Image (cartoon, rainbow over all chains, first blue to last red; front, side, top):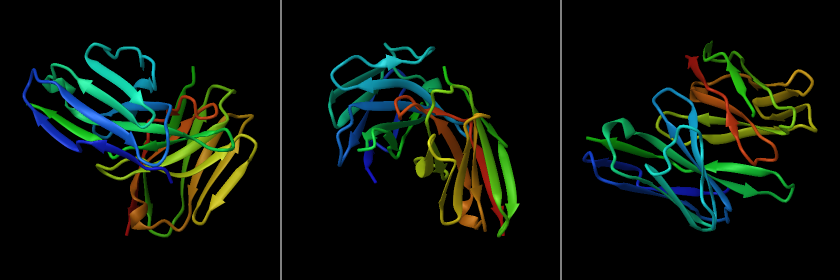
Length: 118
Length: 111
């Protein structure tokens, strides 16, 4: 299957700093990538849809100035958590759509980034 | 928009027994229904999927059934093993454009 990498896997930072998380599709081109947040023992919460070459589409309640998303190429999307605070501590997972010949998109997930804000 | 419900939220079975997880969806336009398995601290992994032109699909011990009329689909795991213990998520989407996930089911297979 398609491979999606995410970096870093774990980050600990002080309150007020910004953290950038990278999501890469390694063996396919992804025009669309998704960013999710997952709290312990809960489901995946879609934060935003990242489209290559255009602005990201944010879900209701997600601050776009807080969570900056850039999808500069067909294989890379970045999420920057600006001025991070302890309540931003969470597991962030990206995913990428791989379009199959059937016309359906399959979604493949990155390994996730655990962010801890002190 | 689409809304996906999933039941049960937790499920415990004895090793060797079968496990069934059911999801319902609201948008009749949804036509692709994947199932993901997520082990603790790891990424969700696609384990099986079904498209709306098919009523059932099987892959070894795992099967998925779809009832378009009732708008529900189910995951069936037979001969469960301890390594099947994980959180399972269902999802509904239209050609994979926007995936809407269910809240997840925590499956525990007891030895």
